[in-house]
Amino acid sequence: MEAKEITGRYILFYFAALFFFYELFMLLPSKWIELLTARLSVWALNMLGLNSEYGINNSWVWMTLTGGARDVKVYIIRECTAFHVWGILLGLILPLQVTDWGRKLKAVIFGGVLVFIMNITRIMVTVYLTGYDVPPFSWFFTNPTVETYHYPVSFAYGVIGIAIVISLINAYILPELGGFLVELPDAVMRNIRGILNSK
Image (tube, rainbow, N blue to C red):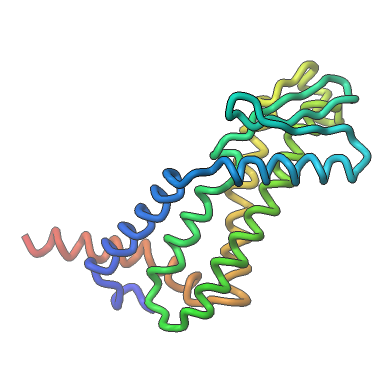
């Protein structure tokens, strides 16, 4: 789809759908995915020979990593699960003008599973770097907290990771997604110029 074929009405519909699915996944109950995230993160850390536990206390899901340079305890909340990213994937994929719903469904499932797995590794990397002194990071951070690594690791996963997910979906399942996203900025600017020029 070329930019000139993307109408202003469709752009509004697309962004409305994206907003709707994002907000929907911010409102849906998330305790189950918080527990699943903690459980699988702990399982993976223990499989690597580390000492990790998880539990729930007053509706707060927590996990620990002990035995390193410092003990780490983190709380797994909705935003730690990438649950809202599933909403973004739905919002990016479902409103596409592609009639093959089978490929859309495959793209959503593939993207959702990949995002979930990447998120587990993100949590593992964050707590490991916090609990253990790993060069070269330990050369700069002598007494790190979870926040020391949480923001840069999450940013890297959020930007690079999602770009990889979208690229894989585009390459193997739904090439229309990448084509549309590439044309979208030009289409938005073209429609804005059209509105301004009509006045």
